Image 1 (cartoon, protein in one colour):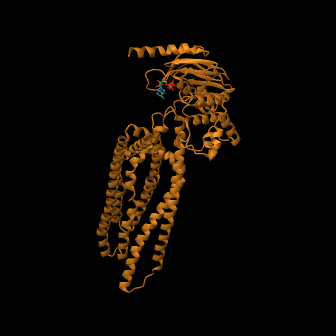
Image 2 (tube, protein in one colour):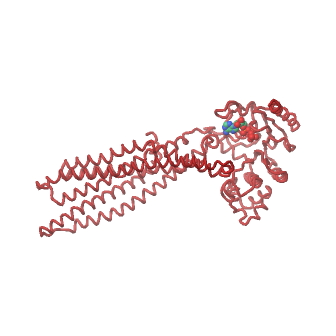
Image 3 (cartoon, protein in one colour):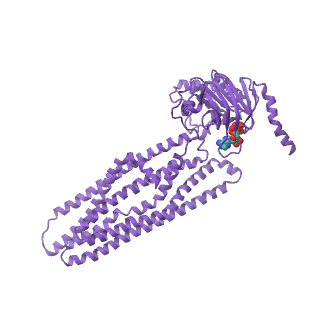
Length: 578
Ligand SMILES: Nc1ncnc2c1ncn2[C@@H]1O[C@H](COP(=O)(O)OP(=O)(O)OP(=O)(O)O)[C@@H](O)[C@H]1O
């Protein structure tokens, strides 16, 4: 129920919309009930008058019927318009709210979630929240007001009529929803989880289709998806059949209410305390009044799904970022020397530190390389410098200030990264470049691409810079993607440049061309390069050699061969003993 309270807080900005939508829904319902009840009275009265051969004024009831019909139509239109508009606004604002909480968690806190699961939260779970507004809050408000008005109306005729009407309305509007909520709680929660699992499995299956086919595992993946689908369908079927049952039960309550009303009212007609047309009116009124409570069982049945969705969203929203933003951040850095001072850091739930005792000073405008075997902690140093994680002890300073004192965005604004895993968005080449600098004019884009040696290739494409690169840039080669990354870094024009094995996996000619492009990019910047290859380090001022997260050697490039050999010795010894 804590979720409900928090959701209500999120809905608060839309309370005027909700009020107007609820009033329109109440008006529509009252017009409908009036229309049906008045029609019952009118037809019976006309028949009775015709049989008795007396004249009656039919203008007033006819006007009431026509007026009710018009109000019902206009009210229904208005109610849909207002409630849909409010829902769309609400959903849009919830997505922004969720995204704003999601962003500071990337990448450290999001590594435990699959992208399919996050997609499910931002789409299906947020969509499920609109149930609370359109299917729960508005119908509950309408039902409450209507039940009170209907009971007062029946009281005018006889207290027993009011009591029986109220009893059956409460049975259908409170008893059935309680039952269906209890029945829907577990499957509703499971549906939220299974939808996410299904989306994750499908995305994984599609993205890894080539591997699955290659290793003959496609059938197994299909079976996994099939079993998830079956479980989902079983829960949905259970909810649907419960929904059918509750609708039938609402119908039964309405019929029983009618029978009891007739049982009470017919003697009143015999006594002359009630006119025959009033009996017809009350009978139809009773049946029509159940429209007020009919949506409630399903609304409460879906509450389980809605609360599960809210729970999943709040789980992300309540996660603390791995690095908290300082309450009074240092002003943006003005100098760009980098210093690692005795840095130690372990990833959560790992047995040994990823890096430990790291000391490195890179004066502004100079270049340093961090070299070491796979898993020696090189990328971890970048993650720490980018403030994605915070060191367990020691500090990292930029321009003399601890980076934890800067606002994360202020720091990252001054850092450009070129890595072997450049993410290209499913957009045009131009859009992919503009993420580095949204205001860059075409001339600047082309200049950056010329330096990155990719302009001629782009210019030859039929659609030039408007060429769509496909999901994760599949329509570009690895080398071309890397050059786009260099062009991005040029457009960003940041004083600190991080190079994460930028030439890894490229052939010798492409590597040479890319190094030329990087040469231009590095001029005047503070550069930190990570690599596991000692070759081609002549242009760096200093080198730090890492082994299992610890410093093995530090100095100019001449320290590398000896240190690398020392690092390889244990591996060789291990290989020889096998
Ligand atoms: N997000 C993470 N969560 C838990 N452990 C991690 C994470 N990232 C890296 N590690 C672990 O930290 C250690 C250092 O990893 P890191 O990626 O820094 O090495 P690296 O030198 O960059 O390797 P490579 O050259 O293969 O990229 C490894 O043992 C790795 O398994």
